[in-house]
Amino acid sequence: MIPASEPILVGEMLRRHGIGRRGFIKFCMAAASAMAMPPGMGMAMARQLRDAPRPCVIYLSFQECTGCLESFTRSFAPTMEQLIFNVISLDYDETLMAAAGTAAEAAAAKAMKDNFGKYVLVVDGSVPTGAGGGYCAIGGRAAADTLREAAAGAAVVVCVGTCSAYGGIPYAHPNPTEAWPVSAIVGDRPIINVPGCPPVPEVITGTLLQYVTTGQLPDLDEQSRPIFFFGNTIHDRCYRRPFYDQGKFAKTFDDEGARSGWCLFELGCKGPTTYNACATVKWNGAASFPIESGHGCIGCAEPGFWDKGSLYTPQSGAVWGRAGEAGLRPVLEVGGGALLAGAALGVVSAGVSRLRQGRSEHEVRAGADAVPEKGA
Amino acid sequence: MDLLAFARGPAFWGALAVFVAGAVWRIASIALLRIRRDWSRPRRGLLAMAGRGFLATLTRSYPHREFIGRTGAGEALGYSYHLGLFTVVLLFAPHIAFLGSLLGFTWPALPSSLVTVISVLTIGLFLAVLFRRVTSPVMRLLSNFDDYFSWFVNMLVMVTGIATTAHLGARYETLLAVHILSVDLLLLWFPFGKLMHAFYIFPSRAINGAVLARKGAAS
Image (cartoon, rainbow over all chains, first blue to last red):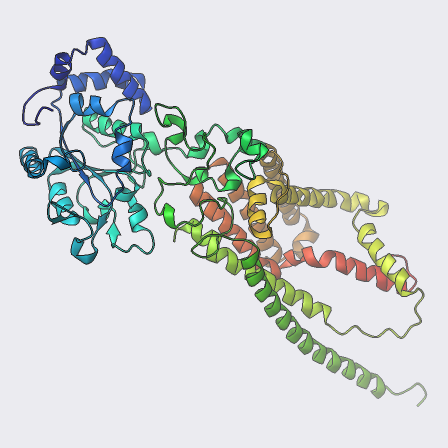
């Protein structure tokens, strides 16, 4: 790994590795294509990359499961190796450099000092603040303090994974560690959220590559997610969508419909409300994605997905309480109670009306009696 | 709690409770009213009255030849949009999934694209019904806030449903939440307006038929 302080350009670096012009342009075109950029952007990316110094990247991991980093390492286009050896200078990664101990900490401090205001800060995991930050401390320092210090000199903060973007599972009820998403701690730096549990590998590398090559934030949605990856719902791009349109649904995970690849909507698929690139970019070199493997989307790229009720309740289904399950019990409870209340009201109303009816009939009879008979 | 969770959760259950309580209240308060005693000698027995009452629900549900010129178009409009409504509500897959989550069973759905076409046609019929109400002097005279608001809440449900299906104007989850909230509004209004005809229409026809049968009159 070449330190960030060395003023080496990406183009020069690629030449040293024996990567020719054709291979380099193919790489850029593939990356641009993955981000749904127009073909011209591939060439623009190549020009920009060739003359650009490798930007410094600091990667911090807090309260997380390392699934995001595992996903990152499985990117195919571009691969993580291509990124960290040729395009960026990964000067610090707590997980990958754990064995280096204080040397790694020193490298991080130096890189942040040398590149103050210019480096990319990548964060995965939520930030616990309970117990004085004691739930997650690295090198004797609380995660929140490390994050604040690192974010102060960052050009941009890229939150990789739902935990850093929205708090994720640690943030879910009852949130025992008082965890927060990065945006709650770092309010004054530009933030790009790349959510998912974990995020699609190419979405992580593609987002980083986009920023590194253009030097600008991508177009973001209201959740600060890059629109080129999070602009469509999984439902809109799902290969099972035609079955939804035909009204063909799997009722259980092993019925004929499931085996025939019918829509998983009724099994609780969250595709209609989940914005992510799973259905287009897919996983493991575009081999498959969860819906293709027979399980509905669980909506892991959306805020608060863990607290939104059952993963198996259909999107249009009613939800009942925190657990989210509806069904006959709440229908009977609510409907039965309302039915009794309505019946009681009806009896009272009818009673009042009967009294009035009785009075008016009495008045009619009295009036009739008062009319003198003919000839009287 | 986001808007969708609110719409599907507390708002829906609250509206459902008001709907059930309100509907039962109105039905019970009418059903328990005192029936004025008819001192005349009955021309038919109880069984015949019940049969005539049932027949009246059928014979009063289609236009009679004498009036078809005047009422045929209105009845055709009415039947068409009711049919459209029932098709959309009961045979659209997401609706079946919703009802299934409450009832515990489901039934086959129509293709979503076909339901979308029927929805658009039904919205057209809704507009035609409103046009007829506004342009006909007699209908206008008979109409009040209840008629227009009942039309509005139905139309709102239809339009937000189409927008949700077609992803028009906002993100899917927002549109879905607005659609469910519009259904919640419909449930809240239902027992207190003319939408209650859904519960009254057939019993009232049956009772009229039975009363007329008792008097020996045709219904």
